[in-house]
Length: 293
Image (tube, rainbow, N blue to C red; front, side, top):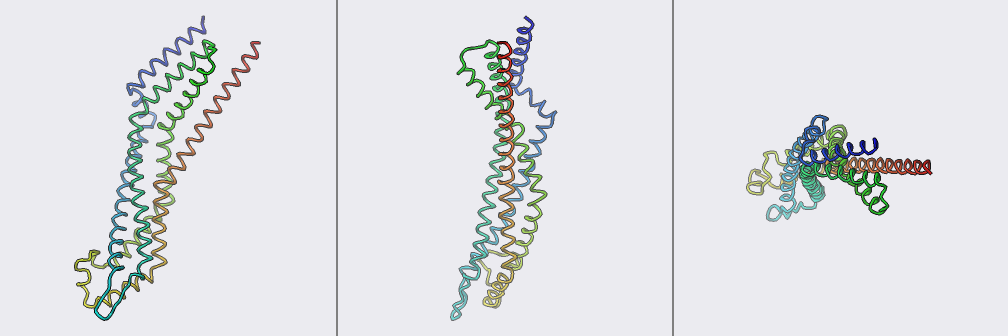
């Protein structure tokens, strides 16, 4: 009798928790234990990272446009000077970094949308997890012979538990961890590379005019100006390549590799822990049944 009283009380508690979770009541509890502030800090970080990425994208776009103009420029009747080959490698490097940074901005925007979507469905998923847990407990308490149904409910409960922990913990912690790794590892290199590319842009376009209109009219001797540009690019080929590589690697790690690596590790640890508890529960039930026999 006491056993059924305890089971009834536990069932009542689970039903109440399901109702509270479905109404979003636990959002306040999440804020109290620090989950909600973590999500807010992640949103602020993503906004800041997106702003920085777009600034780098604008810088690379300006350099890319300027190099494209120089690459296709031919100066002077009788000179026949074609300098496209001289800046081709620099343009290719900038174009690759431009594409990577654009992709990084898209990933950051998508991550923002993912966090917002997670905030809309996490409490519903938690309610479904509690409901499945209640059904799973009653299938054991009633000693149901429908083993297939019990196994399906158990597997569904396990899946929803993993998804719930992923939305509430793994996803925000992976973004927060990626932010920490970025500040310690990649961000200093990216900022150094951006300063170098900015200086390179100033050396090539000292007046800040990367547009074709009026570009060459500022110089009394366009041929001399072209030679000076080619010389500057040639002298800074190694440094410029290193700066671009740092930008490419830095943005790939910041927006994709760090968060994805931490997310997959978190999901794997969560799945492993859930499987361990399920196997532990099976061993306990088997031991209990053997003891009764």
